[in-house]
Image (tube, rainbow, N blue to C red; front, top):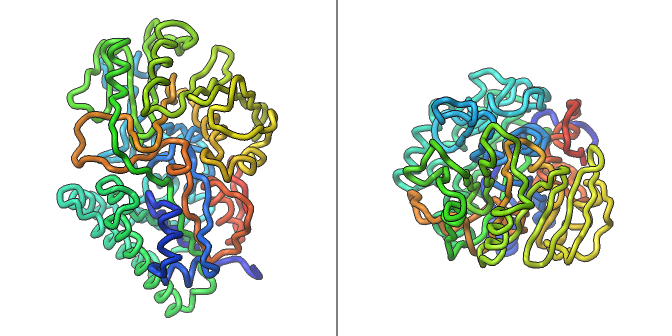
Length: 472
């Protein structure tokens, strides 16, 4: 790159699978994406942040930080101390599904976290979830989003929401904004409804290819095709779902009254446990212990280990993780167990106990985050130690983290459509995402948390302090 890009456009192609996009490029079905964003025919990939679910996994693109650092460890979260202090039982938990998600997230994200406005004060948002630091008018879809998504909810035609996103993006391009952040929602919804590799899901990719062609045509007419950085990435992948497992029922049998988001009606008074799924492929599980105002209970004792043993015997469950009293994270699966702890700002200790829970070949016990990414990037669980570590350090994360094996999910309650796609977990089906750009992308492994500082650097702008990602 001889000169910085003058403006940038980021398109979050929500829920897109890297391998589906690669297959469609190989088959010649995505000619505009091939021409403008991957001329070699190879679709680059990155590793999403954990949990791999919309909302939390959007934040790395908008902050350069991991979701746990931002204080958003799931699309639902629970704060035991706030819940314990709530006289009504209505405080201390959050959902980002439904109305006012932008206002909620703007208020909930850790104070001082970098924002897009720190780099691009005039950022324009299309269906964005986190707009802190930007003026109210920056959310171009502030009036259009609710009607668009309600229509998608009622008609199950989410491709029309993509039309709404493209229309708003066109207005942003014409406005001259130096940065545009766009969420394209249909791949996630089509994947949930029909399965992420279905022909119906692939229609989202075909439609998006037309969007890319029209975008570059517009930029060319404006004389901006060479000076505009365009980046396309997804927040998570998806796995096909054939079997539901009622995690909340397993917890409730052992602990009693359990609060469960998305189960109607769920108790909120005198609850002994909380089960909060995200993407249905992971769940934050909280236990009352002595009281909700008390510290987290020690899961080394009974009846917690009985529940852990039961879950490890379930075909649906992949990997479990919880904190020991010394702060070390214990990770356990059918393949074995390991201990995980942070040793520095971007380094960790990973001690295998009796077989690696992720099936890794021997890893160095002490690693930087970059070394961990490089060593695990090509495995079925890319960057899983860093994902768990950064997520579980926040007080809102679960006492127990449960992830589902691909093919299964962790819910067995009503949803507005039968789900055939799942995400949220650590497996590559959820964690690998396409990363395409007309920028000078190298071959080094990347995380989605690296996209923010990389875009800033390519645009010749200063990367703010506090960013955890690495500019490539």
